[in-house]
Structures are given as structure tokens and as C-alpha cells.
Image (cartoon, rainbow, N blue to C red; front, side, top):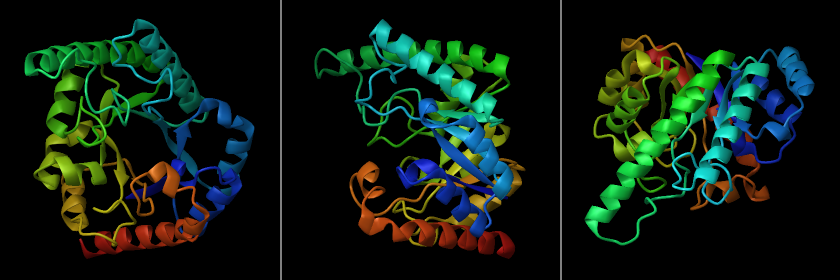
Length: 288
């Protein structure tokens, strides 16, 4: 397996410190949060060369409350802004030779469609409307990304953080409706632990559509600190001949990961999680 870390978990820490940490503990790649204006391309390429680390993927940063990030919105202007944002992330991925842009079809934090009432019929109507709008947004993004040689990794996230696509079944149906050869599947162990009845079965169901994975334990900390069945996951990944990265995404305990990752009291966990996580997973690999 190849290993990376998603760098949003390091907040505003200087990039040089992040690359040094990953190189120290034997990582192959880094996933950069999708904020194209934050990075200087020459600096990143210099760091990649210096530390022997690739940009493995770009993480689309679609958080509810950040304007212009909702590709499922019933507001046409919002959807247009979301498409423009995602296209800039595609450009970023292309320029940094990252093969994958991870995208969620509706923002993290928005847990219901915009419905006029709480009645089931209205909820279902608006859900289907926003599903269709998200499919249309993804089709447009896929066409743009295809011209740049970038694959879109669609990520289902758990029911407590979104409503539109929360599991492999829904993700595969969404990908089928988008019907674009460069739209594949990205899975996240933490979200799967909540919304998949059978982790290994979901991986097998994903099959060769699976191109990227986020990894954290059942409590969202480093692998080995919870009860997630990583041996079962690894076996399933080997069965489908998975060739992508295992991208670690551990965060400190707390109800708001965007806050806990930036708390100074948790800075010591950055090295600890990076070291523990890759060592634990490599031991699982060795056992298999």
C-alpha cells in the first residue's frame, strides 16, 4: 500500500513542517485541501522534490456555510459558483500532477434538502430535485476534469454530516447517473463505520471504481486507537487489487474537528498520529 495524509488536519501549520513530518514517518504522498489560493505552486513542487513526496490528491472543501461550495443547491447562482470553485480545484490538481480531486455532492454539515415543510412528500420531492441538480453539476465538472486528465473521486459521508450520498449503494447509483468515465469512488473508513453494514462487502462492491481512501479509526483518531476492523478492510482491498493511496485523516477527540485540529493542546498528536497510524497499518499488511 501507498500512504498519504490529508493536510487539512494540520490547520495553518507551515507546509514545510507537514512535508518534513510525512517524510520522517515514511509517507509517500500528501493530500492538499482544496483551497487553490492558499498555495504557491513552486513552493509545493520544491517540497515534493526535497522530501520525495507526491501530491496524491486534492480534497474538495465543501463545507456548509462557506458560500459557493454547494453543487446540489436549488439556487442556480450558488451552483454556478460551486462549479467554478471545483474547476479551480481541478486546475490545482492538474498543475501539481495530482491525479484525483475528491468531491462530495452536497456540503458537509447540510443534513437535509431545502424543503418547504417537514412532510415526507415534500422532503422526498426536494431530495430528488437536489439529487438531480447534483448529478448535473457533477456531469459538468467531469467534462472539465476530463480535459485536464483529472479523476473525480466521489465521497459518501455519514448521515450525521450530509443527506444526499451516505453509503456505497447511493454512491454507485449517483456515479451511474453521472455516466462519466472519470468519475470514480472515494471511500472513508470513518464514515463507512457508521453507514455501511459490511465494510469489506462495501469495498468489494466498489471494486475497480475505488480510486482513493481516507483512513481513521472508529473514533476518528489514528488507526489502532479505536475498534475498526482494519484487517478485514485490508483483505478486501487486496482482493480488488486496490492501487490507490491510504490517506490518513485522524483528528483529535471533540465534536468539532475543524476546531480540535487547530487547538494548541492537540499539536503533539500530529506527530503521534502520523507515526502510530502508518506503523499500525503496515503491521496489518505484514500479517496478511
